[in-house]
Image 1 (cartoon, rainbow, N blue to C red):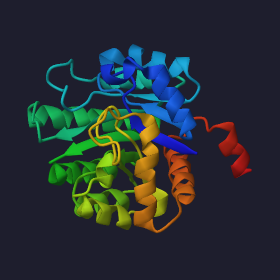
Image 2 (cartoon, one colour; image 1 turned 90 degrees about the horizontal axis):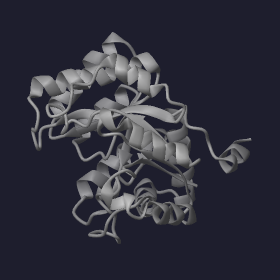
Image 3 (cartoon, rainbow, N blue to C red; image 1 turned 60 degrees about the vertical axis):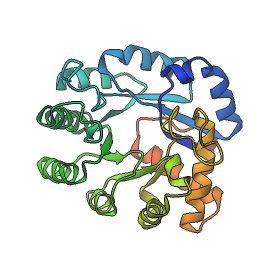
Image 4 (tube, rainbow, N blue to C red; image 1 turned 45 degrees about the vertical axis):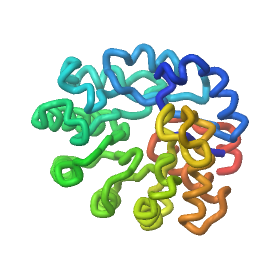
Length: 267
């Protein structure tokens, strides 16, 4: 069993063939998928997808690229929407200095609002961090000092230093298809450092398809290819990495109901 802890099933590239993608995911052993919110004002679309499929769950949040062009996220609204029975997390939210599409002070304020929502709801925060390691580490350490919250550094492509900071703060680290790319030796080294009980796997579909699917539209079934590479990096079997990352995802996203097969195995 595998869990795709981060995908975007509402995006047009997947929406056109969503049922086919879900069928292929089931055939590949993907028992749970979390479709991640990027715009708070489109939460109804995200939650409707989750409501229609037992194996799909969702989050609520404003992607940092959208901060500045969308209404600034409000704590009360995030908390309200997060009460939806299939909403299992807050985000994705964070900092993106690669595109720098929002004023940095506004981006930081919006990110801290999401942290507050994660703390208030008890749901995990899904963190997007790109080219912003120093500020991300500073904010996470500062916010953790105000009160504990859980989180995952999603689609991790940052420095070993940020990964270590995250692990030290109790966060999880999730790897996408980027870790399978030929030139990702440094990223695989970082993955090798992450404790097995803090590791997640994701697609970030429809983006970043793993080798051997690189160049194609990504979809949840392809998470198996990323899991195989992580198994090699960690020196364990593909079954062991699938079991560990699934258990980790269910522990982090504790509101997500496990499939019957996982409950049986746990018992």
